[in-house]
Image (cartoon, rainbow, N blue to C red):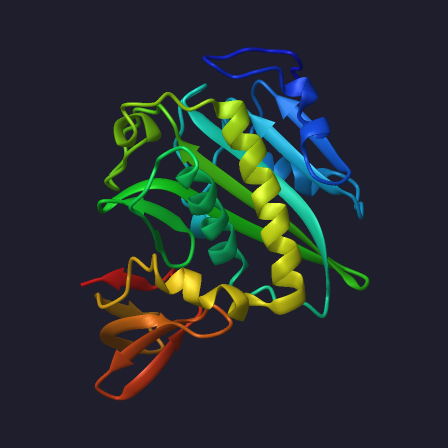
Length: 259
């Protein structure tokens, strides 16, 4: 059931969300939904940017078919669907979304965040947020859904070490509506820059928060096995690993692990 005009914690009236976003954005707000990415993907194709926000996901998902755990009201759960031309190289878009999140959280006094290639936001070796990007091509357009999950006050049982904004920023209470609005606007702004300039525009900014820089990793997809040290990404956001056999390019984190 869609829910408008609700208050959970310190969240304001989400019925005013569209008026606070840049440009014309179609907003879908839910108390509970199976998955915000899936919801947007199920909508008819539209050139208009669309946003889905929920206080709860019953079928949250992460990268490589993993489950994304969250607690109702304790996380920011949102997805943005934006259309790009088929001529746009989408490599590096998840990195750009992560940079947008770090930029917005600075306004709330949250610093020291890092980005673990390609889609996780970390604080002191603990996961704070994740990003999942899915896309579909239709005619001459790429319909891209960007899902973001941020632990705000969540207490979750997860094997991956995690943290939340309450633990990081004990001095200030963060207004979820304000943060959500700012994040959507920042992502849309960065998407416009990305569409024109590609990931290369953000490469230096990424290097300053690169969690894997200098760390040893192993790659094993059964076709090739190698280990080495990460030394950043190229101008398309592809991970670079220096091995005894020379530089290797890594396009997916599915078969990558820290040593």
